[in-house]
Image (cartoon, rainbow, N blue to C red; front, side, top):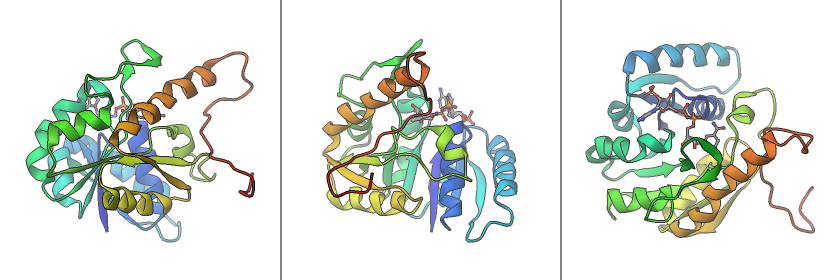
Length: 226
Ligand SMILES: NC(=O)c1ccc[n+]([C@@H]2O[C@H](COP(=O)([O-])OP(=O)(O)OC[C@H]3O[C@@H](n4cnc5c(N)ncnc54)[C@H](OP(=O)(O)O)[C@@H]3O)[C@@H](O)[C@H]2O)c1
């Protein structure tokens, strides 16, 4: 199985690429510059050398990464590049599932979101791509720090939302393979809540009154392990 991660050259995309490759899933790492992603893919493969089960990470230009993916394409660019990246790859997305993990942080203030008129980045992606492409929001609240520290388990659960249940379940199954619990949070409109959690975590992480950083979220209930 091969997935694509567009904007995979950033810290979030690199961390996800490492985790999925460790789970035996090949990654097509996308960039606006195929030479850049090829170089970063080489570095990431070197980090995985000798680990059991690890699959390959290969670098591509974003549209070619989409073509290399069997079914699932992750979007990991900053919100400023969200719509333009989607427009550029839209023709290649036919029949695939777009996993949107973009958080629309307010320009110049990562402690706030500036949601688009559609309500959230996930909803904006669904509106832009039309019903032919199923959009699923996921992985918004996982820190790049946790993803890249591959000697440690990932410190959070993952909320997944989208209008198509079968697509959301496919994403939950895939994301579960990197060792996290996943929960279906509702249709695409639930992304208004899920995306807005990230600036809250950023606020906690930079607060001098909070004795930790790189926080994640956990769903807990009586009977579940703490
Ligand atoms: N970092 C985190 O801890 C974290 C946590 C949760 C969610 N997220 C979300 O994950 C996404 C990626 O985060 P990140 O920290 O990895 O982002 P980033 O480093 O700012 O950007 C990721 C990659 O996107 C590409 N890019 C940059 N500007 C672009 C533009 N205007 N148009 C198209 N592509 C552009 C760049 O790749 P090329 O130059 O190679 O094309 C860059 O390496 C963001 O939406 C963020 O909100 C991040």
